[in-house]
Amino acid sequence: MKRSRAWWQERSEVFLAGCARLAEAEIGVDAVEAIFLCGSFASGEETIVLETEIPILLSDIDFVVVVKSGNDLRTWFPRRTELGSACEALLSEVRWGGHVEVGVMMIDDLRHLPARPGVYDMKHRGRVLSGKAGILDSIPVYRASDITAREALLLIENRVISVLGFCPACSPAREDEPYRFLYEVTRVYTDIAVAALSIAGCYIPGYIARRDLIRTKIEKEKHPLLSNLVSADVLSKIDCWTRFKVDPSLREGKAPSDASSREKIWTRTAEDILWFWSQAMAQRDRFLPDLSIPMPAGALAGLPRNYREWRPHMRAWRSFLSRFPVPRRIVLAASLGSDLFGAGPLDIVREEGLRLLADRLARGPEAPVNGCRLGFPHHGGRWEKAAGELSSLWKEIVFGRRGA
Image (cartoon, rainbow, N blue to C red):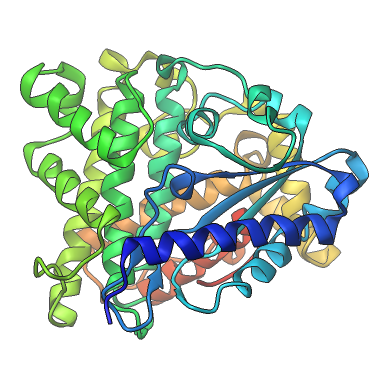
């Protein structure tokens, strides 16, 4: 039974309003400044499969709850995954491929959000669901050119971890395959478009808008930087996978027919994202002066560690190491040495992700990998085991949960 987009829009509106009411009820109406929606749902470009018997919601749903006090922030920030899970339980008519992600912050945090693609989208496409109607005015006004190449490359490095996680050898078979697998491929190419336009200083919100702009810039305007970063083949894939993002259908024959087909698609995707990262890093002196600033995974390109930001690095390590018993903390800290000051836990994870992906493409799936110091952020042995460990750890640090 194929359902219409109108069927979904009617239910999603009820669901989003219900999520806002639930968050207010849990946290307390008087404690909440506002709740707003961001991400693809805010722009109406969420990915939902409507051609299956039970619709499959592939996109994450991103809420931000702005609380009024520091006490409320300290109470609910660690419980944001709990809030997201409670929201997911409100919608039983779909099969969940993504999650409800709930950010918790104060209004002063909004005023200090940096120039990033996601923040730019939040400012221009965010949608207030309850509370203070003008809350988005608190987000700084940035120009597209204010988004740095460093932020763009961070996005790509995060996506590399995702690529590790949906490798056919790492991801278990599910009822909603091949949609989930193809959606992960889609996210790689739409993020390449985001990063390329950000680096070129012409980022705009919207998946379709970005696809059209990057094609115009490369094919009609012969934009030198974009032409170097995005090959004709990758440009074609950005077009193809953007169409799948807004209309996830297998009618065009995209479904991989067997494990071998999935492996080929995954390998080409992995090659493309590593090529893009390498191209950007290789051209940093000519096109990307802001990449002279140390990059999180820049050690792989011969850049120094970022010791200038040692304070936030140390705060991140304190938070990360607090999950371990004291003896383990001491041993890990001693093993990491100066890296404690030059990189944060996520920086190390991203760097190892790039190494693991490059190793897989160079040596194949059967070659064992060497473990890292004391097993952080992954142990040695089979490649898929190390990739699964790393992907799971990244999700735990970023989202507060391990696994899918």
